[in-house]
Length: 100
Image 1 (tube, rainbow, N blue to C red):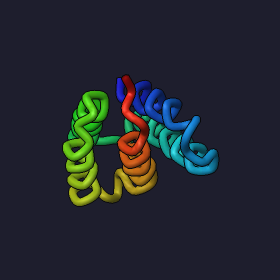
Image 2 (image 1 turned 135 degrees about the horizontal axis):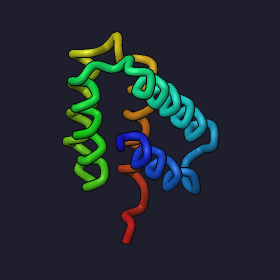
Image 3 (image 1 turned 180 degrees about the vertical axis):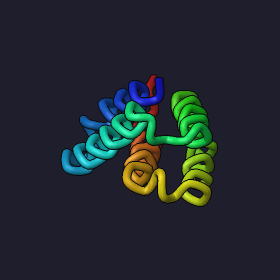
Image 4 (image 1 turned 90 degrees about the vertical axis):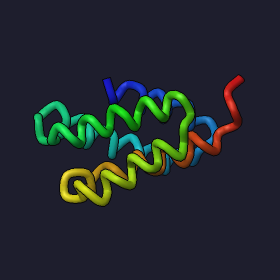
């Protein structure tokens, strides 16, 4: 339930964000999805990612960013491969023209 909203956010960025940036984010989301599906992520990481996605959907950018930072600090080994993609996604989604 975490990946779909992230992919939706990525799709909404595609018209305005450079293709290579979007593709990189997409690759990192795939890594996240695989790790999640293979049970490689700990419960706290999954829980925080779920929260992060909720904040993202409600356009609470600072809250989402805060959760991203806490993941980086507390679980760097688990998240280092893909979290930078999530961070970029937050930043790009945040700078999109507001959806009416």
